[in-house]
Image (cartoon, rainbow, N blue to C red; front, side):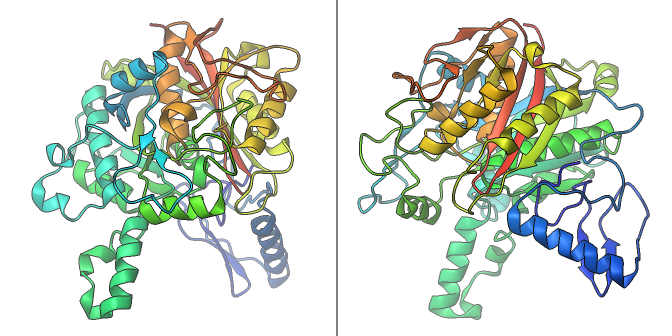
Length: 480
């Protein structure tokens, strides 16, 4: 059973604390165990946990039982009954899907802050979004940028799902949100205020937004969600980690429904740090742009947006007459050790995550109609994932697409890939890889700058984060 995040055991909603020669299960919602073990076993567990944290490798923690993605003898089937989306193409998933299907890119020059001293100047920034149309003025001033996007996306989600929320109506609904950037703008402002004016010169309201779980918490408050409330910050793998957790919650009947996905914004300091790392296009030379799998690729372009799904138990969705847009069949997570700001040196973590997702879904590789890739135009990542896909699918040229050329890279981008694939796969194709014009022969995958026909509505969505974490989700789109 994979241990995919720092400090979390196999349930992922269980924080393992090794302190004073004991392991305490301090947050578990599924068992009442408070394990106290001998000093010898505690020291061994502490060493094992430290080794896992330092290497980002896959580990096993069994203090609280079965796999974190749900493993009861009779698991609930998990369907997608709603989509909420705010992107660089405007409001709603239809605007996003229509634009990307036509080959459009949401990437443009940044206007929110000055980039004249940077090598990079582009991002896929949100357009056509007025937060005041979604959030009352008295609340709006207390929300930071990511919280505004998350709450507005959630409102669109519930409207699309025709799901009643509010006091007493959402006691069995939870939220799992993935984010890379939540709280950063507030942290920058707060630290700047402390430096310039001291503690008494900083607005107290800023402090509550400096934590990355503020957007999920504000969503829960706004819509009366009283189920599990969890935030994942796993860089580029944030949103699939949140979705995988939500799948486990619904499978194990810990909630009837879960809001899940990702929300991110392009914050100035965040952008300029990436620019100084030379991670963004152009890393060294060439034209700036996002070109997954292209021989001219020279780095990725950051993006922002909110991409949320409503997951429900199939039985509960049927009882309320909800329309399913797809079904999450399997999830997989693994890791390969890597430097904090680099991609893994080998493909084993990606391969393992993909195979675990297939195993969890009860699928063979031949059952998969397409792969929505993590590749973003970073030279090493695209080659790494291409090799992993080739290993999983063998000689078969499974259609592959990346959405990063359209929506940019973020902690929410993998969720955007799910939103796009749900519609295109239902219609018998996989979305085009925007930005791909000259395929790199070193990336031996069947990617194309145009839509590709598929023979199955089942697809896999991959995410690979700097540091080595890899996620894969197996999903079946409902037929159009």
